[in-house]
Length: 177
Image 1 (cartoon, rainbow, N blue to C red):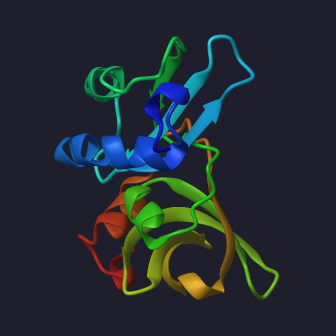
Image 2 (image 1 turned 180 degrees about the horizontal axis):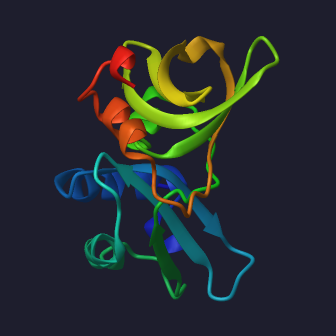
């Protein structure tokens, strides 16, 4: 938005204004939405990075985003700013999402119509390693991203099996499992 006094900046302008601040903190802006139907209007910024975004990180990003956005002339329009992580229900759609979800339990819908659940290992060159239970042990499946139709992180309250984590972290080979 070029005329600042006309109101809130567009989502694209918010990204332009805040990207540098977020990048310096090690995060990137995944999405910006502006809800003008709420009172006051809400600017919501979703940030993600290779390090989990904890409460301290959200607070720091909120402070820096607020300082930048407070310098923008919005006329007399007050707004609420909300900075958060994508949340567990966000589908994994890009290689970086899979990389950032390493060690998390996921459910994958594959192009062949099958579904597989396992723990994410390494992701590189368009392939994810998924540690899955086979019989009484564990194995690693190498699944090309192009074969994944849908991927969602699963809520997992139980601690992972030690052998499963060793495979995820690449400290043992599949034959050792």
